[in-house]
Length: 345
Ligand code: MRU
Image 1 (tube, protein in one colour):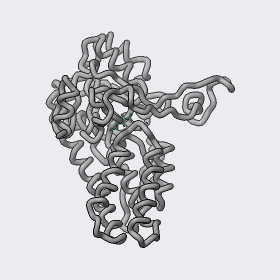
Image 2 (cartoon, helix red, strand yellow):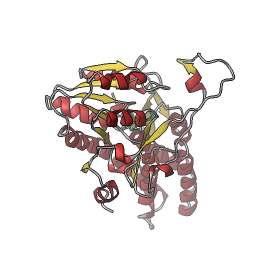
Image 3 (cartoon, helix red, strand yellow):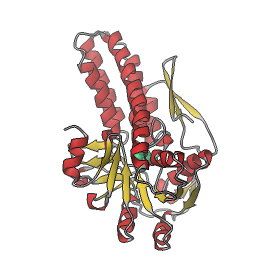
Image 4 (cartoon, protein in one colour):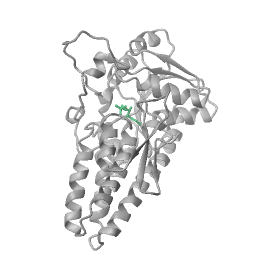
């Protein structure tokens, strides 16, 4: 199942993840505003996937700018990139992909608008292609860390749906499964929006990888009963010191893993590492609408008027992270030094 596909007629189709697993519907985006809306309401979600979608969104913005003068074109494109980047603040892949496309244009100071439009599309395709290839590498590096018969607890969805394809944490699981390691997976449901229940469980069931669904509050007891060998999650942003922002609930799993002496692995491409931020305290954490907490499947459960706190992500301190599995190899502490090396800085 493709997360997104670029159509020859110059439109982007996105698999609407809000309807999964029961409704498989592709949304057609004809403008960058359509893409921004889809990212905001999580029709497309997961750090690498929103990066690739935003890249195509910028291509759509460029198509719509009829301004023939290069400088005006670039100014308006920059504004569209700003709007796309503002849709979700935590995943750095979004800003990274947009910066990469804008940088491509800056590297062509003598090209006119039609050539710039073509260069943008080519670069968006490259972001998409490289993400899939990078995830396969993450899978292969990570699979080496997975013992035969491992029981793996994962959180949220860091699978094919969260990326251009194959997945990061689920990429490792796919690779280990493909290598005949007979892994079994525990998927945490991931309240409030149930990415574990709806997306991770769906991906794994489709692929025939044994998966058991648990609610988030079962993780501690699962570990206490010695039913887990390692925890494996994705990331939305990794600061220079190795602090990891990922779906809310990740931090609790890392603390529990530490308490039970279990390895806690994070799988993410190098594009998720943000060396500009010295620690996780600087990572902007998105807060979403109260209705995501008060309601379930559109039905109100909480009393009207109750106050709600709904951070979409949390930050796991680097000291709880056993290793970061990237597309350029496995990174161990000290993270400040080793993340910089792997990022080539
Ligand atoms: O709010 P979401 O569904 O976009 O959150 C996704 C996650 O937290 C993923 O774990 C992360 O983006 C990594 S995806 C490879």
